[in-house]
Image 1: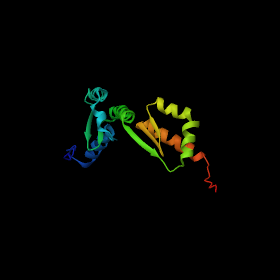
Image 2: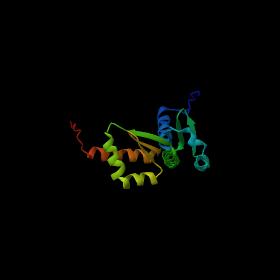
Image 3: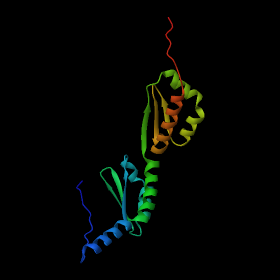
Image 4: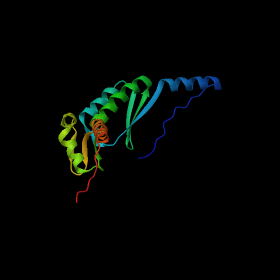
Length: 165
């Protein structure tokens, strides 16, 4: 993709007025970017409807560029559109996290004794596999929450490896 530089050229009679005009533009115009890990979400009908809804009054424009989404326009409209688009991306981006480095018996304990926590994650669309590691796959927001929860549970468990001859 080519890099396109967008700029506003201000012309005026003196520096003071130009500085005031620049400050006003900076107050009124804004842009925000959203990291895009999964470009397939842009193919969803909900995404198209959401971008059309947010861009319908020309106060905001949404551009997808090199692994990110850029929301630009009038400050208040950008803030609103950014929140809605960020939430959509966050809820629809599928990720996988792996938690490892624990003995099998510890993973078995989590799997068998913490079913309410695991069931809650599963109800939120997270697929959890226990096979030498704990693998969480699903919506980014829920996977990150689940990873934190499981890591907290693991940090609270104490175990000792004992060799019996």
